[in-house]
Image 1 (spheres, helix red, strand yellow):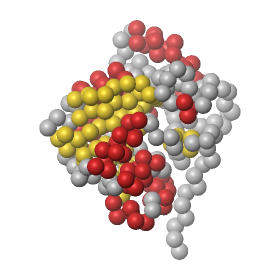
Image 2: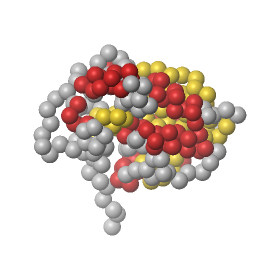
Image 3: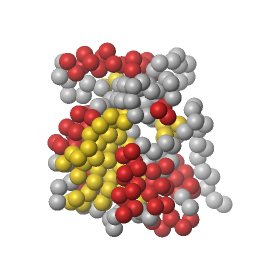
Image 4: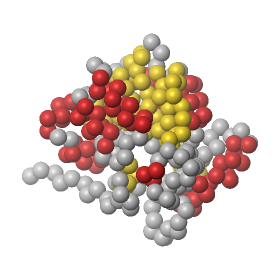
Length: 248
């Protein structure tokens, strides 16, 4: 008898699918950094890596374009759903690796492209730095890194006064926010569940982390997310992203 799949939670908004572990959401709209990851992975002879893949929207798109992908997530249920959603003709090009950043066990100098989208803001600053140093080890020389993270300039805009104060005080991680539910732009019930804390970013923080790990940053910008809806969108700075390269 085959093992039953975990039940995927119902989304709050179209295209916004909650994770099984109440850590966040998988957004089904693919941003410009994920699009480039998919395109470059499909053209590469080297395998691609997606960290924090959730239900695999970017992984499956890359597989369909011809890439070989290792998909990693902290929740085994996400990986099971991803595998079930992957068309049979692409499954021989998919490798699943359960693990939690920064302590994922992956081979060094293995991957040509790496996507870690909307994951780092769930980590402490120390673990962000350690995770990106590990990404440097896992990529081959010349490999391309794509990082995307949440900023205060979206659904977390109630945190902006604290963010600006922390920036003025030159705090290394000005986006550390807890308890997270207190900063949502709408009331929550007593049984609402969310991450214990978040570590919001901007392009400069992502650039600093990547450069300190040894990467050459090629693109560093805010990301406009109109798909976040009226409560999740502010002014086109809802996410931030970078593309960086491991020197050859």
